[in-house]
Image 1 (cartoon, rainbow, N blue to C red):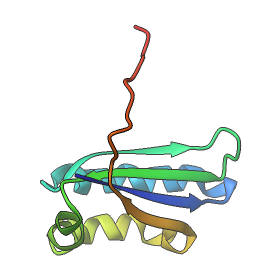
Image 2 (cartoon, helix red, strand yellow; image 1 turned 135 degrees about the horizontal axis):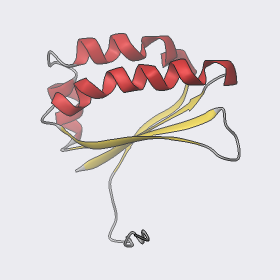
Image 3 (tube, rainbow, N blue to C red; image 1 turned 90 degrees about the vertical axis):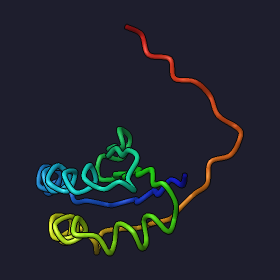
Image 4 (cartoon, rainbow, N blue to C red; image 1 turned 90 degrees about the horizontal axis):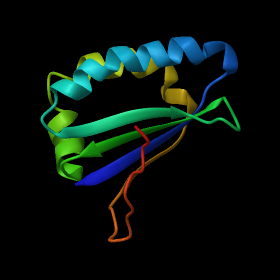
Length: 105
């Protein structure tokens, strides 16, 4: 498994439209057997900064499997207006250094 991080700088006036776009793009991610999970987070300290985190089964699964699949067209169409606002798009491998999640409930 690999983790892709995409960092965006989105003008404050476009935040709602940006989040709606990724809400629409989510259907394509959920339909892909290569996508294991994803989340979009907005910075509390700098509200124009967003991080999209996507877990893929492999780099090949992302770059060839998803990008050549029928799901990619609708995904890209939904996020196309924001591509020019990407500041970083990188794949990472997890290390053995991990911790658990503590959620009160």
